[in-house]
Amino acid sequence: MNLVRTAMLLAFMTALFMAIGYMIGGQSGMFIALLIAAGMNVFSYWNSDKMVLRMYSAREVDAQTAPEYYNMVAELTERAGLPMPKVYLYDNPQPNAFATGRNPQNAAVAASTGILQILTREELAGVMAHELSHVQHRDTLTMTITATLAGAISMLGHFAFFFGGARRDNNNPFGFVGVLLAMIVAPMAAAVVQMAISRTREYAADKRGGEICGNPLWLASALQKIAHGNAVVHNPQAERNPATAHMFIINPLAGGGRDNLFSTHPDTGNRIAALTEQAREMGIAGMSSTAMSSSGSMPEPSPMVEPGRATRASRSVPPTGRGKDGEPPFKGPWS
Image: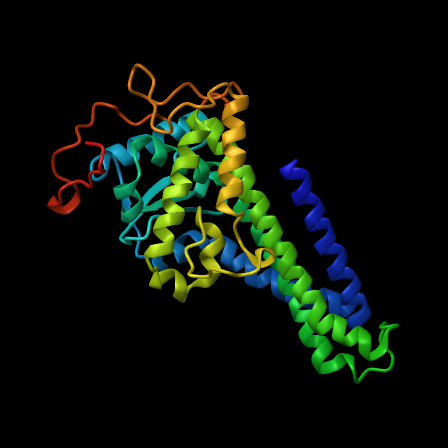
């Protein structure tokens, strides 16, 4: 259902772009706007992992520098049937996490030091499974296409402002009213659709994340904690780079009270309700979000999970010892 909804929203945005483009600039105007927007976003898509990780001063970790965290991601990656992504930590007290990269072969997942301090191992597993599902669904590509169309529509709005009212031979049958529609209504509508696609992808990532980790209630509990943490901990890095907000598991910006139409993320309560229902359907309703199987490991994943292609990180790596450059390894609160 989420995939169908995403396809419908993209089709609507494409139709909107074609209609406004033809009305304002004809075929040549449409082509120029799309070409410029596509060029800008293809560059961002190809370099998004390096750009975002640099913005947040993230550092790559491995089985020696952050053994519990890294091995958890490795196990979840194998369950999801994905290549092993690069694993990062970034120093920020606000609890959050994100995934980036142009495809599963060039993916990276990152978690804040704040999120490792407040979540249990099970809750963090739910969060990282959510991020891996973004990688599996190629959501970076989806949002790049969306951004390209939204950018092209906004560009046509600028064209309308500068040229639409002066041309007498254009394809606009609505005159000045049509120019106003192109300048104001169309870019706003594109932004609304862009945000709706982002929210749809979050619901899909929640659902698949619950399947990968084996218990959707772990992710539900994590979302509740992260939402509370984001409400009380300011994130200056995210405020300086608001365009990256959609990448995080929960919006890191201090934007309370904004219209839901323009929100990059679904309401946290709705996400928790959907995950709770998913858990009920999986036959684990009522289980504590911190419950573990008798072996002390994560429960078996959903039968929908494909056989893994990643190499599982060694479980024998001790949680002590020295990390890179003589630094002690990062330890979560679970040791």
